[in-house]
Image (tube, rainbow, N blue to C red; front, side):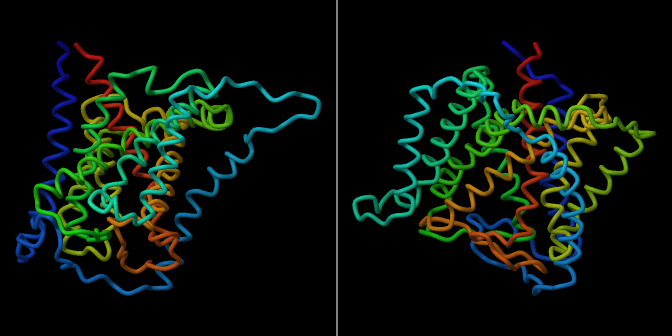
Length: 367
């Protein structure tokens, strides 16, 4: 029987402890009551969000654009081109289970956005079949185009992603209690029902993002465009790891105290904490690859999360059980329910998904 490496399990335990304890400690030390942050299901909206600010919106938009634009231009430079007189490369056929996924996806989409009386008892729980079908279709498309997909190439790893994904997203649900950037609407559920009905769709997050990432990572234009970037060798990596770890930890401790300012740390702090611990324990990680000039997995992961994010937000908009957003300072120009700048959060989230996926893979490969 395979056992999880102690250092890997240690990083997971330390990261989880920091994610859970630091926000609560910050709220407690600031003199606030802990009860609203521990409510389950989280129904009370206790965070007062700041009104929209044009200058803040423009500043964040400029920062995000300056970060993304060079990568987008490089992707455009290496985009696939059809040369005159040269036939397009042939691809295989979509496997039968891919067509099954297409049928289930279409049916689940209709059921999710309809209000049939005969489906009334299950109308609020249509998100899981939508995403199970999406995962099946993406793997089938990847198999058709490259002859390889995550589902068939690593079935044990693929199946393990589902329970890991549920735990993974529950951490973000927990952190959201301190900023309340999203909240759920729909039928009232008991705490036990809420837990199980939420856990099922949460379990599809990692399989969806990582299946999409696997598909994108095999494309020629991402491999050509993002595997030979100039390497970077930062001096004193362990010093910077400690600095980032302390900064991210302090941010988590203060996220509930100043939620209108520090809400982006909900997405950034978990990433920085895990990568810092990996650096301090001498393990290779995604940023090690990026430092060596190979960005193709990072770009694939960020793009995959953004693609999944667009589908999440689109399918959410007409669902019976759904979520809505309340983002301080930048809540304008919504695409579906999400304010446009909110989509930037999917980019670091994609990196977190692939880092967790790598930890699961490393744990499985060790005896």
